[in-house]
Image (cartoon, rainbow, N blue to C red; front, side, top):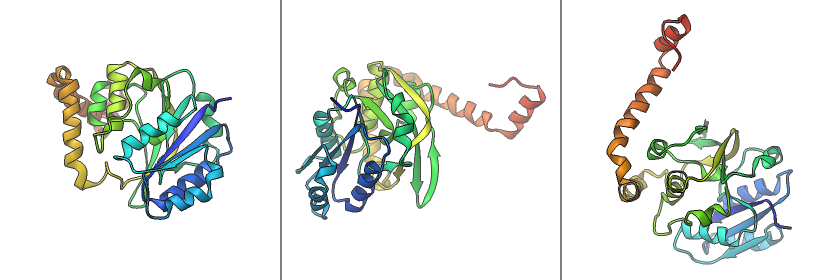
Length: 260
């Protein structure tokens, strides 16, 4: 019988992060999943760790690849679960009961996304995501791959991750999935996993690469929408700022303004 969930962990020279992720997965109370390890030919002891713990994994491989997105695509191709979750090395579940609590909600729709606990400079905060997704949302933001279950069949409707991108291929997948292919989705208002800022996409040195890759998608695949989007995004920011204004909230509370 095929597992309901495939947890895919991509790793390259991040032994301590890999240990953290594997321990988190192993400690889950819910066990009806497979764990797939895709290593990019690490030289820091990761391969030895994978070999010693081979019994914990349903599939594992270590070989050179062209980058994280080729590794993620390998994970998809070798996953047997109905849904995949990318919990890459260094990421971990928020606690050991979270899959037990929510596995029954992983069904029917193409994308099921949760909130994400983010740790930056040892300071944690919870990143929340909207119930309704839109093109203007993806221009500014994305969904969290460590906290989004993706139906494996969804990749037959879309494409796999674009391997020549260095940073934004997961964002491209999500914007295409929602805005081009109209995949179904739902948000679960709870935190699934923990992500530590410091990877490729969050490194300031890579911001110019990230910007160029996003621009190539937005003005290549979505140029017709980009004519109006800057104005829409500006309006949304203005409305959100007004909603957070203490004066506006006081006026709403006193009945001088309707809630908006």
